[in-house]
Image (cartoon, rainbow, N blue to C red; front, side, top):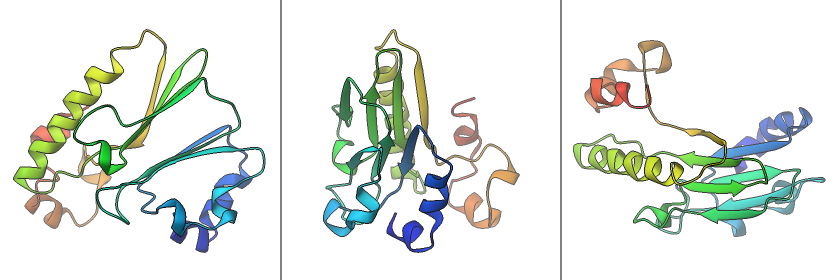
Length: 165
């Protein structure tokens, strides 16, 4: 997040005047962000950094609207990783999600568990749902770079490509 701010990329996005701006992989605690990043005129902001690994994961939402509620995490073992925010409005729910990478066999198992838990969580609501985030998945070769490395690290497995289709 700080890097995007330093490169003026974050300001370019705010210049587009979005109503809601969900961000993933913010990799910052609130103490590491200065006021120019945290507080934007006309926006409420909600940060959910990782408490497990400082400088890793983390999600944030800027919104011009007042939500009826905000939930960080989804009551699972992943909650200390700063991976999911659910922001509720009168007519819909918005989920801001940073999905696990799944680069090793052990973390791939964890990724599939996260997907299963997340789908159960989302299916509990009768409201329209908007899901946005970094899904950390590659459906086709055009979606990734350094394909040889990705194939070596399970990032291009057929099972992972089928997720979400």
